[in-house]
Image (cartoon, rainbow, N blue to C red):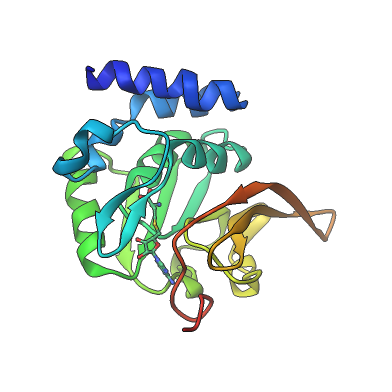
Length: 213
Ligand code: SAH
């Protein structure tokens, strides 16, 4: 099947059918060629309904999970975003179409370099990457309207909450190393509110806020 056709089918069959309804998110998922982020040997699976290996024992997330995290971030276009876990760069590319500036950190230099090359070739100029432990956020560029964590965290990351702007939200898979819940933390009238968006399975976060093993 043609990759463009496969992408369109992915949007209809994996996203719309499961309730993704933000038109901007659906447009971004239609616009970003996931196949550009996939190692050549998996190209026939570029629009499959699941994660795929990208090397260094890491994965590019399932399209639905990228869309869901983007939707629950409730972006309107002017936001500054911090992503933790650049991985392939795919989620960063989707976010770059939904917000003004995307900052993304990755601990593995090889993945950072790979994502940098792909994103530059695609022409994105509002994505800023660096190699660092996401446990520290990226304080020099704070505050952020949304922080999106794309690796599993064992608990709520208080240090990250300090880098949110008023009205900001943190979206993260929080739980055990094998299974997490997608959580959104947002400050409403001075109180932290938690919303839950179902179970998910992400690769483990490493570093100070990650799983220590
Ligand atoms: N968002 C990615 C998927 C990322 S997979 C995409 O769209 O492809 C999770 C990534 O988080 C992995 O690349 C892993 O190396 C990275 N990671 C794990 N712990 C991290 C930490 N403490 N700081 C930054 N990145 C981390």
